[in-house]
Length: 491
Image 1 (tube, one colour):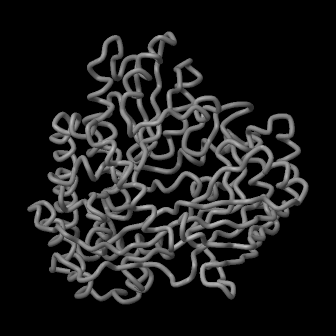
Image 2 (tube, rainbow, N blue to C red):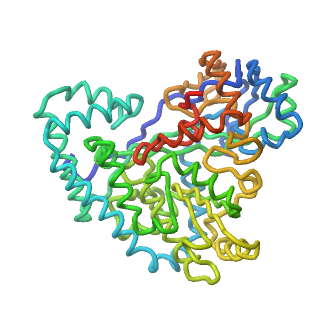
Image 3 (spheres, rainbow, N blue to C red):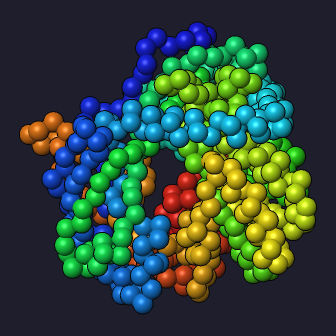
């Protein structure tokens, strides 16, 4: 771990054509057939046949009067394809190249605060870890690995395997701690560079159309075409920093990192699940919702920070990317977004950050709230729309959709019909047919009747008070993907 280079470009993927996710609670059986890879177009095409569960049928009946609630933010089968990884890199690189004039204009105005926040986070992390007694380190380590049982720290090495390897051996634990401290120090010295990250993939899905929704009810085949996949990048030297920290110390660290922006910007990383309640309070008070998505954000962030934070980027295809699975991915994504908003909106009267403008940011999700007349919303739009890497989310604005929940109707509830779950422990390989690149998959839901009933209540909004209450129990430092949060609710 003391070497700064890993020889070779590690490819952490299966040798199957790809992976798929198990059916969601709303689906009894999902059949994917006729999978075909088009090498000329870098695309996969297949047919889906969805057999709804009883709760899924009830949901379709519930929303029969407003089909948009099932179309917007809907997802076809969540699939990942190994052959699309390189195409995805090219897509991101080419897109971010067009952003470079805007990046170069903003970079001198934001980079100092970004570097101070990220380096400051590492320094605090070093001080926290080095001062733990060995028994506390051991407790923290076993708690962390227990929460990451289905994740890997390196190619072929899961956190569970590492936990079993160290067990209660203080000597091995000390070596792990020293290795982490060494890497933190090398990062701060800007000497941990040129890392060849492990490359993996995550499932991606496109939305249904209104015609697709009708086809589901009729049991007809639905066409699906996939041209993109999600890329996962990680390295044991950069992905293990938090494994020796307690949950409470991690929570405090997040709050310290984002303190410079707390008067006008909040993030679930420091606020936890209370962010959902804050959104409800702002909307109930009449604030206007102006949501944005930062496009190809990990590559755009890489363009901002690569020369100042070399330990936090990887070079693929001539462009720098912020790896998706390192200790600081969410922190750096959020800090850069906050600084961009500060510079673009902070000096544009009559907008006043913290007064008539508040923002909630989680990585590439930027939710702006504006108090006052609609002309202030126009002022926000006029400034943010100039940035090529920010895209206004019309459907999210209409549905008041924030991190998985829509604040319309009875109360906060999910929208969009998802035919598969989004959890790594529910992943299945796509079986190859007799032709290389072709695939067929039949998957069923594995949830209980009670879980399906809870899923239905979640969508109808009738349990929104319990939802906000339980989400509010998620503290800073425990945040995971919003869809995973929804699946863990005890309704």
